[in-house]
Image (cartoon, rainbow, N blue to C red; front, top):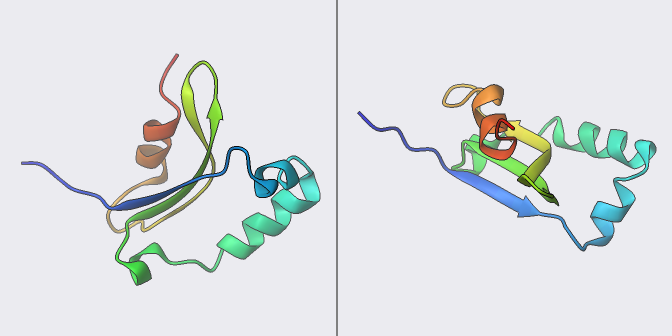
Length: 83
């Protein structure tokens, strides 16, 4: 039996937002802002904000997960593969 999940992946590399998130104050503000987001409201199971992390590929900075369909470790595994 297969399962499906719908995710919005927001690629932040090369954006002013990615530069701003390098500062802890902005990182904390972003976490607070995302706290009230519910992905299922948009027909999604997860919303993930990523940057490129060489050599392994994409790395999630933030994620908002509908825990009725996915777990945070499942979503993390998509963006932080084992070495």
